[in-house]
Length: 171
Image (cartoon, rainbow, N blue to C red; front, side):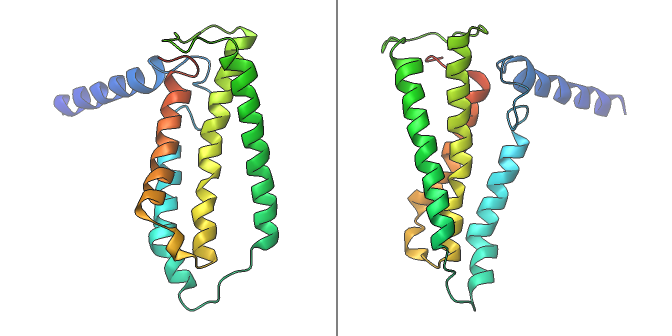
């Protein structure tokens, strides 16, 4: 019994160290950044839908006409991308060195602007999971390649790590 309590306590301490203490104090409380589990759950549901549930659901159905939804979705994605490019140019690269740039962990307006940009980039990677969902619903299976799935699964994880630990700078 004592070993189980000690082990559980060690796991809890390791979890706190890894996901609370080592995380950037400015972003720890932001949605989806406090723990890796919400993001991993989203990715798990994404993979389950795209690889199993979605194809089975669409097996005996005609492809859905998502034209209007895709126009709104693409408009949103383009708007977010334009904003991210603007933030990268005006808020980061115009003030950053292309050499090794340390992370500014302060709460200054410029440091928070860069942290917010990294966080929005992470949210963009989550929203881009809908690309594949739309492919499944439109029965565009030829566009769902291993590389596509790998990219859309790994990028949210990598950008989560950037937003959680090093939101700005080069680490």
